[in-house]
Image (cartoon, rainbow, N blue to C red; front, side):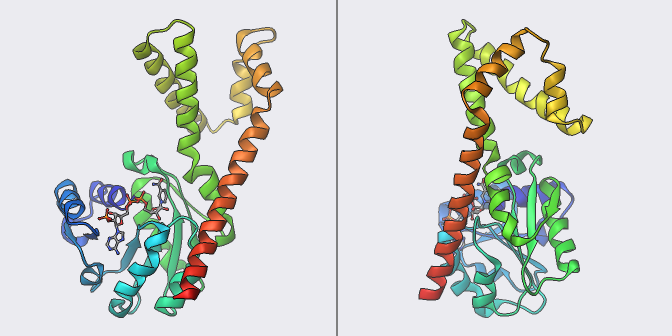
Length: 263
Ligand SMILES: NC(=O)c1ccc[n+]([C@@H]2O[C@H](COP(=O)([O-])OP(=O)(O)OC[C@H]3O[C@@H](n4cnc5c(N)ncnc54)[C@H](OP(=O)(O)O)[C@@H]3O)[C@@H](O)[C@H]2O)c1
């Protein structure tokens, strides 16, 4: 995710010299440096000096080790922008002190600059800090501001969301093949249908209900398909899946807080 953001910033016109990156393993650092043409170091403390924004894009379980590595190198006024799923801003504030922290949840379409990010302010974050974070994040797609307690829901909806679409794509492709379509044709039909439906939703601003009603004639083929999905509990299933993802995000945040308290 960190690399996707760096690529988005470069595409948006940032200079290579403005972006320094860090990885943990030598081979990853070499690959990231080759892919981005930015400097990529192994010690994140080395690249903090002079940076306005510090993006933290490590797995939640690696946050504490990272904060220990960098805490003595943090400069005045630096804004921390955390992408770590479920990790509360308080985890950063406890280790680093009264610093501005923005917690954000992008999603993987960021890789093709079609992401969506929900972001929230920490206790010492001003609107200017949020503007700065938004300038960075908007390199990979639109950004929406929320209260921090809603970020677990964002994680469950749009953070996890691409996986829902991919699972639908897999199921639809398999069903298409069972109906006799060759795999390559099935994949082309499904991929372009999901992309086109997404564009239709976003570009027209019309509701999914309206768009669905338009393709559902009484007694027609779509009505037959929708009837099966409704009857077999499609909506309830989606709701349960989102609830499970939000709960998992809260648990991950709880582990991060507990690990911080233990350290
Ligand atoms: N993937 C998503 O859909 C998504 C969406 C939104 C948010 N996020 C969040 O973004 C974060 C990163 O996810 P990801 O999928 O991009 O993970 P990832 O591919 O494992 O990337 C994490 C990177 O952090 C580096 N790293 C870890 N500890 C480090 C340290 N102490 N010093 C320097 N570099 C360090 C790793 O280096 P090595 O590879 O060398 O170990 C790796 O390059 C997670 O917290 C995740 O919750 C992910």
